[in-house]
Length: 43
Image 1 (spheres, rainbow, N blue to C red):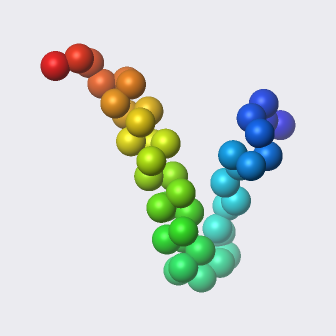
Image 2 (cartoon, helix red, strand yellow):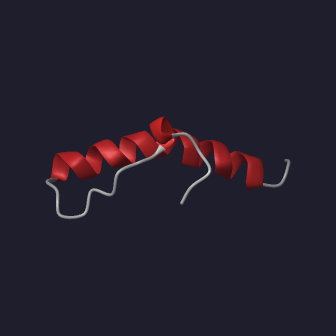
Image 3 (spheres, rainbow, N blue to C red):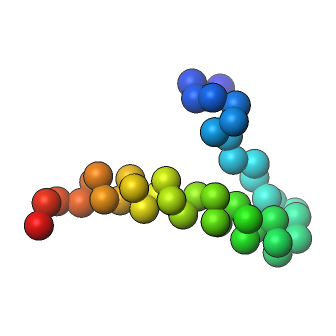
């Protein structure tokens, strides 16, 4: 169970075609980059 909004959920592409994996990667790229910036020490 998550505490986020349903619209924020990312479907697991397991068993899907390559396009589904690419779409998932594209959807996750922004949030992952933002999180990495937050966790990186200040320069």
